[in-house]
Length: 332
Image (cartoon, rainbow, N blue to C red; front, side, top):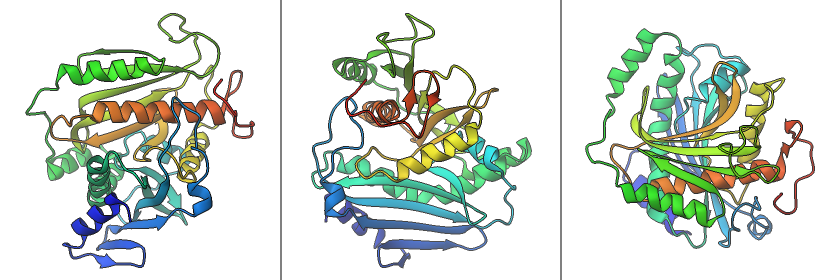
C-alpha cells in the first residue's frame, strides 16, 4: 500500500461513509452519489513505459489508480446534449463531465506510485475532489440555466473570493526557470506563468511566429471561479488552423483517452469547448483559499506532460487532432 493510500484511509475512516470493496461511497439524497475507488495497477501495466515521451520520463512504478466519481440525479439538472457537456467542461471543477446511460457523471482520476514525492499534495487533491466534486459539480451544471441561479449557488457555497496572502514572486520565477531547463519558451507576469511546447516545426513560440504550431499552457493564480471561489487555473490552448468539424466529440474522446492511461499526470481537469468559436481546450481549476507552495510548478509540469501526450499521440501538422494516427516513438 502506498503512502497516499494509507493517508486516504486514515482520513476517510473517521467519517460516516459507506465502505465498499474498493473504497468509499456516499449517497446525497436527491442529488446523486459520490464514490472513491482505489484499484491496483496490474503488474504488466505498471511495468510499461510512461504514457508520454514528454519532457522527461516517469521512473517510479505506478501501483494504483484512484477514481473519484459523482453520478448525478437528473431531477433539477438541465438536459445537456454533447455540445452542452463540452461547454460545461470549460467550467468543471474536480474532473470531467460526461454522460453514462443517459445520466450526467463527473470523474477525476489520480495515479499513485510506489515512491511518491508529493504525497501531501496528492492526498490533499484526492480528498478535496471526493468531498467537493458533487456539491460543486451539481451547482455548476444548474448554474448554466440563468444568471439568477448562478448567483444563488455562489451565495450558497460562499467560497473565498480573494487571497488573504500574496503570491511569492519567487514562486513564479522558479517555475519559469524549471520550464526553461526543459527547453521550453516560458515567461511570467503578475500572477500568471506561461510556456509553449512545439507540436510541429522548429519555432518555439507564437511570439516569434503567430502561426507557430505550439501548445500554449499557462497557470493563473488567484483566479475567481463563478462557483468555486479563488484558486489556480491551468489551461492548454492548441493551434487549430480551423475549427474542428465536431469539437464536442473531440473533447469527449480526449477526456475518455486520458482515463484509459495508467502512467499519467492527474486527471483533475477537462477538455472542453471555449470562446465564441467553441474551440477545444484544456482547463483545470483547483479551489485554493491561499497560495499553495509548489502549485504553480506542479500544474505547469502536468500541462507540459499533457501537451507532449497530445503531440506524440494525436497531433497532425495539417489536420490538428487525429485519433487514428500512429503514435510517435520519439518526440517530434
